[in-house]
Length: 385
Image (cartoon, rainbow, N blue to C red):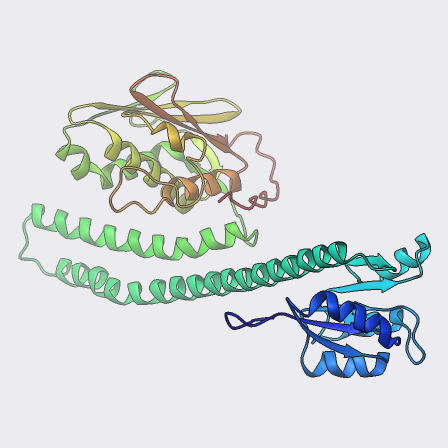
């Protein structure tokens, strides 16, 4: 029950013996507002009209006994969360068990010992208040989660509107003939980036479905090396600005133009995963450093991304958790979390290796295309934090 500051909490005392009520009132009146009822029916009416903070309930009464009163209190939406303590001369184990089974929180035997009664009441009112606050917090979290989902859906919709211009304008301009080859290349880059952004907006809904175990996973044979090369092409300006050297190795050799690294996967999800990981590697690398990307081919394809810079020790154990970030002014903490979800959806894994001082390695394992046995994607575990 909510109380204004300074207001006393209310105890409903239910006992058919007035002398017992007087004893309990003398113990509680200094600290609580005490309401009384000498019959079970009257107690239920009082509790329904204005629920008390706690009920002290006798078992043996002439109209409804205490057990029936407790049962009705606990089946009512209005009073089911009000703690009930039995106060009775019936002190057999089976009596106490029956009361607790009906939903009572405690069982005190007569004659009453004032310090025990006060202590039990304080404890159970405090527990009830804690449960009430926790329920309110849970409802607030649920409402916040729903709001976040609504905002995300709105953002996806609103972001698509300006993309129509970004995608449509280069297509229109490319139909003209008065552009140089270099200018056409730039227009194609804008068009490709706009189309990729549209795909990524649509892909964000897929990540939400993966989180909730509702994603319809449909892998096919794709070239992971080609996906990686596409990601690096998109990051070429960021790589050039930091004067980074990027080396790709397949089984410790530079791949030729016809080399493929085939996995069973979804192209767009893999692009999103590799884009997040490579972007992190570029941002973390010192100026003029090197990034090495190594593919190891076997029954499982192991992709390792090595870059300079170290992940801070205080987040290493939580590196793939949601909203974990460090050292990025505009970081959301969703990139590595998203990558982890995508790897697991592909029946693969992703790990962080910080064993080399001054260097970081992210290692992704995915099933190779050969001898692939289709399986249902795993349902992601609820993320920590």
